[in-house]
Image 1 (tube, rainbow, N blue to C red):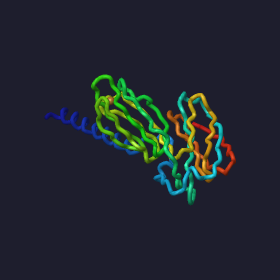
Image 2 (image 1 turned 30 degrees about the vertical axis):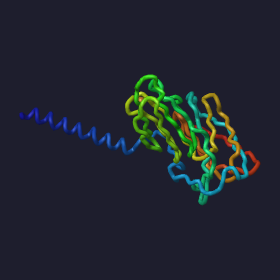
Image 3 (image 1 turned 180 degrees about the horizontal axis):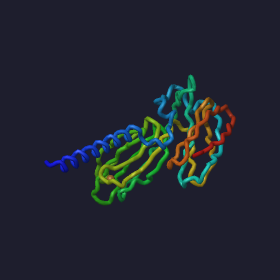
Length: 241
Ligand SMILES: [Cu+2]
């Protein structure tokens, strides 16, 4: 090995090491531009023994304001019930909505976006017309791998945690979907053309109101709201850059 080859070799080694270090640092920092979901991460949600159906209820209504042009994407407004010390408390026992059926025909998740609630199930059906196998795995706040399944088969998953889930297939790189799982039934989905909401039948108590955006263009908003039996609490949700 002559001197020039050695120099080139050392330079390549240095560049290689720098790339590895940069990648590791980036992986640890994570996507820093995304708003954090503090209360979601702060506690594993417990049901407790109080029943949603038996509680005295009120409503929360409000409007969203945007400091810049809003993307043509849904926003979810959801409530986290607070307990002692204003930490996420027991979310109550409620009956889960019907299972969300997701088709995989043509190598696409349909629907590819959904807002669900803890305890709700999702069922992925391999309804392909040909013999094509699919896989389903989740990344994000909830991680799981439902395995590979053939034409005519299906896989179910019950969400026990709340948060954001991106859905993928290990066989087909372009099969993507996204779900948001709310901690309890007190949530509203605002489609791209709507900026007001009303969440009805919320058991009286103290809540932290949060937003979740399918396309994260603004800082997520949060505020504390008090729900009273028979009352309506009004909130202005300010979405700022
Ligand atoms: Cu697939």
